Length: 202
Image 1 (cartoon, rainbow, N blue to C red):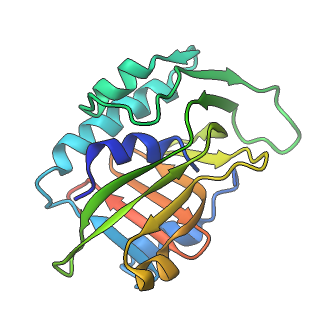
Image 2: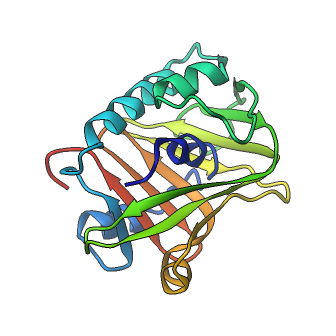
């Protein structure tokens, strides 16, 4: 299982036109999608509750700041190895073609590597994590059933990695987008997709 600290950083490290390809692949159990935590995992309830809180906070149209301590409390984390700042949120002026309000997130801190161990459905464990840049900026849109998070890249990129070379080649790379709801989180990387499902069924 991924340690909870990784989930906090992962969320704030990812194209508003979300590639439905990843969502489709993961829901179909395609081998191009790595399911790192399935609904039957022991921690699924806790993680689902944390993402539900975060989803509710980001979906609040009046939200302007998420204090770092509040974010850590959502995920039951007491140690922040990256010394991240509070997360500021602003609403961007609408542009032609926008299907909903676009929100902008800014978060800063130390450049660091957040590692965790992960248990895969195949029954073996390996190290995984996120390389976090000093400054994280991203945009997100609240859709009817999920929030789509997209990177606002200015030369700084967050990267998912695995200790196993083959897994890293197949599933690691720059995080391009995250689609999440209280029921699931799907991460789109350069190479493939990583899925966390929290509901009864995928």
